Length: 117
Image 1 (tube, rainbow, N blue to C red):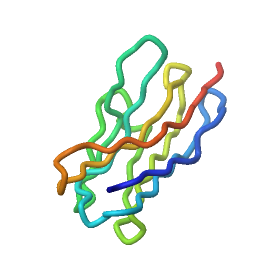
Image 2 (cartoon, helix red, strand yellow):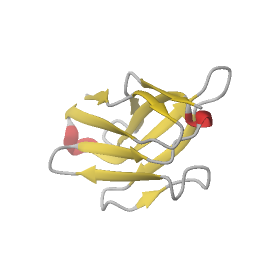
Image 3 (cartoon, rainbow, N blue to C red):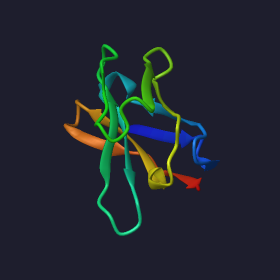
Image 4 (tube, helix red, strand yellow):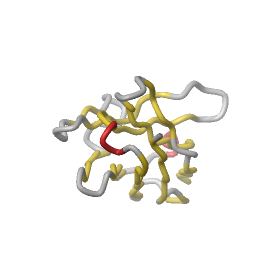
């Protein structure tokens, strides 16, 4: 099994920055893609960023240029650096990894990010 622990959420002002961290443990050799999703109240969970095993990142236009994803393979960790935050970035952010051994995604517990205007 793969387990995930997230940290780094909190309150920020518009224009500010936050950094989220996600540490994986357990069967970490089974991990392929690592990434982040977010879910706002009453909305679906959506992709924020992903990083493949070679570190190649993907971010949708909604956060591109403001958010950066990085991955530390040695530490089995993935990070999301968020800058120029906007109130619409307010959401619960979830770490997600693909467990290729079990062919399934694994979710973290979520961390709240609140951006005030």
